Length: 143
Image (cartoon, rainbow, N blue to C red; front, side):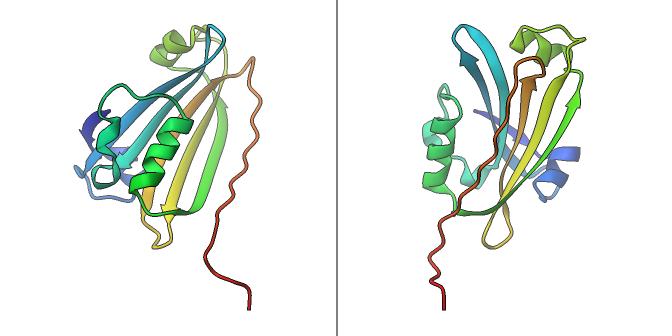
């Protein structure tokens, strides 16, 4: 986990004042020996669990750890687009900078409307399939 301050696009994405404290978690997912995804989670520092200060396991473990310390999520929006990778993304994913990637920006809010987390996911365009399913449990009963 990296401690940082909200700047520019991140401050806007997380709807926080500039220079607010954030935590960034970097996750690289693998399929066998090949890197298959690069995910950067951004969480307001007061919602970042201390247990993730050491090396972070990927995706499901991060989601489970965050769920323990933040309010339940109410809404998640995802924006998907294709683009060329940055040199750093290409190096991590072991792909050419000429190969398109699928870039996903995900923002999740709690029931008060506060952004609880944001994530940038990067997937190689030549071997990506995406299915998005978000199920939220509510405590309300139908009338």
